[in-house]
Amino acid sequence: SLTGKLQDIFKKLRGKGKLSEKDVKEAMKEVKIALLEADVNFKVVKEFINTVTEKSLGQEVMESLTPAQHVIKIVNDELTALMGSKESKINFSDKPPTIIMMVGLQGSGKTTTSGKLANYLKSKGKNPVLVACDIYRPAAIKQLQVVGSSINVPVFSMGDKTTPVDIAKGAVDFAKNNNYNVVIIDTAGRLHIDEELMDELKNIKDAVNPNEILLVVDAMTGQDVVNVAESFNEKLDIDGVILTKLDGDTRGGAALSVKAVTHKPIKFIASGEKLTDIEVFHPDRMASRILGMGDVLSLIEKAQSQIDEKKALELQKKILEQQFSFDDFLEQLQGLKNMGPIDQLFSMIPGVNMSKLKGVNVSDKAIKRIEAIIQSMTKEERQNPSIINGSRKKRIAAGSGTSIQQVNSLIKQFEQTRKMMKQFTDLGKNMKIGKRRM
Ligand code: GDP
Ligand code: MG
Image (cartoon, rainbow, N blue to C red):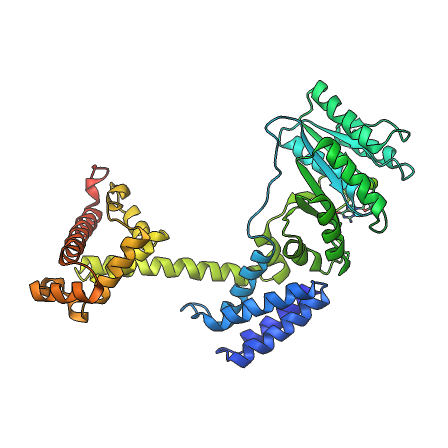
């Protein structure tokens, strides 16, 4: 399996300690083969391998990670990104009913998944109705009725003598008149994509203007999944994909290719024949499932949070010992942009009002200017700002393309920050002050 192969590759890598460029490239060659064997689309594989190789060689390895863990982390992050990064929800209409149209090849699981989706939405407080638009397959209507009655969801049907377009329109009216707020249309499939099927689906789409067109794809479909997804998407401009039969011996390629090729997200996955076997698709969970390295990944996560914690502690020590320098100041300002350790540090101290700190102007432009000024200081000046006299200020201003006033104002800001930090830390030391307002 893909997971087994990836595990073997990384096991070899982990045995190595320090990784050379050759090691990484060799491992990536094996990852590439494993992905291709799992039926991931070759274009997707090529791009994926390029990105991972580039990042693996281009980034500094975090202190507390081994090089192999570092590569695993990058592979995991990129797998997640490939599948869409975060989960995608159903778009509910402001004006009910929300119309969901299920499309896909015959046997992909449309009818079963329509029932699962109805059941899922019912559990979320919706009031769905199922619609039988497959009038071609013998017993298709009956199948949907069985599904509906087992989950207590009504099935709208007009037999097989009316066109699917009229059935769909009739169902929307029925929902409006009877206060059903979700309409799930189960459509017909073919064994292969054909024009007639596509035209019929397009006609239903044009007639009822669905909020969601969901393509149901059997995860066991190999390389063909890309063609299927592309054809349906071209004709219908689908909104998302539901992957079914993930409980089977799937090679996993479908999940990895679909989003990359169609740019449409996987919204749900189904892994079983029971009507409760459906769940929201989480790209990060799927990535770690494919990697099969939950333990390594949680270790990596922990290492990351320890790094942040270590940074915060180092900073706290510096402040206590009054060694907070312009270098730290610069680093913290840059950190503020992405909620760096300074926030965590201050939020640990009772009574600190973070909004006061934000008085420091941290727009990108301001940070660039501050950066320029600090970079024009000598090492001594950064560590010990009190030596910055008039002539030094003049030199710094000229060197950074700023004015003496701007240099002055930065030094003032720095001294204030330093004083404020000292106060906060003293406060932190004397916890008895408790919730006193700052
Ligand atoms: P449709 O032709 O697209 O409507 O497909 P159906 O809903 O009739 O499903 C075809 C077959 O696949 C049925 O036997 C289902 O029980 C089965 N099936 C659907 N979804 C799943 C799933 O997630 N896992 C498994 N194991 N079987 C499924
Ligand atoms: Mg069906």
